[in-house]
Amino acid sequence: MENRKIILAGGTGFIGNGLIKYFGKNNDIIILTRHPLASFGRVKYVQWDGKTLQGWEKYLENADLLINLAGKSVNCRYNEKNKQEIFDSRTASTKILGAAINMLEHPPTCWINAGSATIYRHAEDRPMDEYTGEMQNDFSVQVCKQWEAAFNGTNTPHTRKAILRIAITLGADGGVMMPYLNMVKFGLGGHQGNGRQRYSWVHITDVCRMMEWLYEHPEQEGTFNCSSPNPVTNRQFMETVRQTAGQSFGLPTASWMLSIGGWLIGTEKELLLKSRWVVPTRALTAGFTFKYPQLQQAVEEIIGQLPRRRYQLF
Image 1 (cartoon, rainbow, N blue to C red):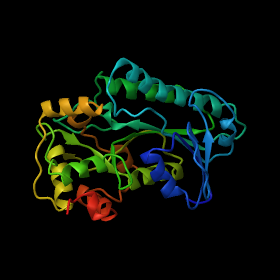
Image 2: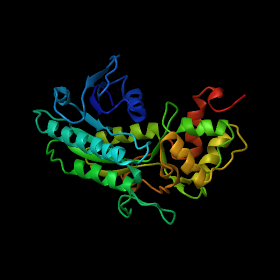
Image 3: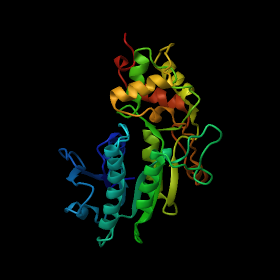
Image 4: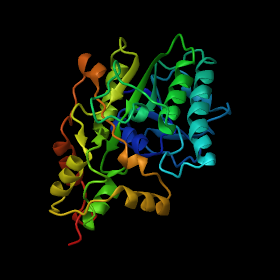
């Protein structure tokens, strides 16, 4: 994919930076963000608030691909204020992008909205895919449902649309791997809870590749799970990270300890204990292939990019 105009809404986080790294050398990238940085190369930052039309919408004119990643992080305490901000930041940004698209003479060719694989229920009995996956009504699922409803409620007759339900994303430049490696480094890299909960994951490179694949296949639209075809248990995940980092031992963390730790650092234990057993049936059936289908090769690639001090004490 070269010489295309790509818009990243809310593109300054871990996945956004991965997309900049993946697409930035050969394409024009425009980042819509509340806190613009200095532009560099073919990457330009533009101010927006994710709620109102303030002039940023003109940058969507003649865009090839719009990717919406905007939304308050769920890595926080689920009090009423944070819950409302999590809902509003996702639905408002999605609706205003839809409104902007409908104002344009030449709207984006394709619009990919980020979603979350946590939309499916806690599952230890069978995998969840786009056809047979089941949903419940806990807070995380409600967030995902409202997010997708806002996206599906927009009418963009000249812009093809797709939702990516993204699993826990692994990469060397941020995200969850750094906290996990810190735990491993200090001997705390055992399983969390009973360790049986499923851990659906995807390498950041495959997130970028699936977005590129969707753009390049105009027959594809609708909802796709963006998750490795080989999810593992939490116990298997932590063991793989430990062994790849050269650590033979890791203390497990009981559920009650996670409750205390979550309170201390301002997050929720659900983020570690929910069993996300998600598979990418639609993408695989349509011919998408993963560069990192197996956890071992993904973790090896990530740790191989890091200095030794990031995952070992000595």
